[in-house]
Length: 250
Image 1 (cartoon, rainbow, N blue to C red):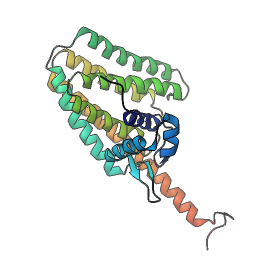
Image 2: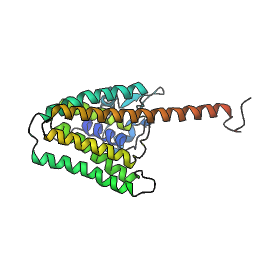
Image 3: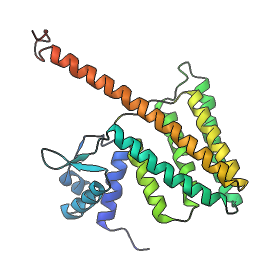
Image 4: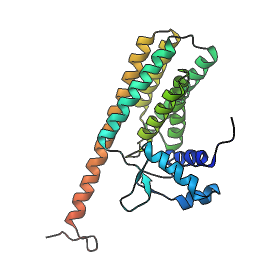
């Protein structure tokens, strides 16, 4: 394969900025700034931004230009439905073929990484992940799913799944740290999925992955609802007071 084009570099660069939180939901995306960062003209940057807008990562701002998209509740539901349909189909396909020992070891390694973080969290007073532990957990969680889906040998499904997971993970609200109990549930599901795949039990693998995704969807929707309630409360308070004097509006 040849070297990636400037447009492709810009596409991946913007994705990374959004994925790592540098560009949050609603943040403006500047062609000029990105062009300077990548040492290119603005044309390939604009092309990459247009592609990301078509895929739902960016959207046109009412004031002109583009911003990182913000999901509505129904968007989250639709994305999870798409993720479930694609991943459950893919894992059923993977479970029907022999699992290479090297792949099994890599999947088990990522399950064990979550177990390690789980044990660390159990020793914390808050029993919740700190930022460094959250980074390690996300890497293990995403790595498990990405490797499992790559074994389906369907590049189109892989791209759709990756794009869908990225949209779910970065939009709307900042994910709070998982508790030890939540980590245990995630690790248990990953282990059950891996065992089912290793045993060529496609029905069980599909069932476990569907349940795992549905639980994640409920958690994300609950977080979104909590965020919306807090946002509306702040709006209600702001209408009760003048911004400058902070006195009640009569």
